[in-house]
Image (cartoon, rainbow, N blue to C red):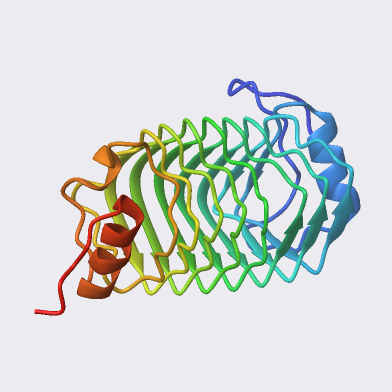
Amino acid sequence: MTGRGRTGFARLPHAAGEWVDADALLDLFAEGDGLLEGASVRGVELSGADAGEATFDGVSFCGCLFEYVDFGGCTFRDVRFEGCRFIRCTMDRAWLNRCDLVGCSAPGLSLVEARIAGASFTECDLSYANLSDSSIDRLEARRTRLGESAWQRVRLKRTVLDACDLTRIDVFRTSLSGIDLSGCTFEAPVLSSDFHELRGATVSVEQALALAGLLGVRVSDD
């Protein structure tokens, strides 16, 4: 491990694209605000670790298992997670900029107060995830399970939800204006009493009828 330079970060001594193992990651975490650049992390298993607000820049994670790992306050820039599993992990107050999750399992992942400048979720399991009080500038989720996830008081901008499972999603006090939900499974959502969260959202006819039922509105067969 090299010493801290002008950037204030501890740097892992590696060449771009070098494989990094679990021991090297733990050494990085121990620095408190370490920086990992351009590395490849494959098949690493970590449990009960604290990343200590590390910065990951241009890093590729593949087939990793993270259990009870605290990524709170970390920065993920140009990072790709593929086929990774997150069990009881947290990314609270993390900053995600051009961060992609592909084929990952992360039920219950906590992203409370996260800043998501740009991220994509493709064919992931993020059911029961908590994104409450986060700020999302750009997010694309495709064929991803988000059922029973919490999106309370989220500030949404450019968001695409395509063929996602949104069953019993909790969007209390989060406006879905401009969000197209018509291709998603959207059943029994948790909304405020006046349903203001849905104003401006695009829904299918079937979704509209289901929501009308929740409101107690009777729809004639005509």
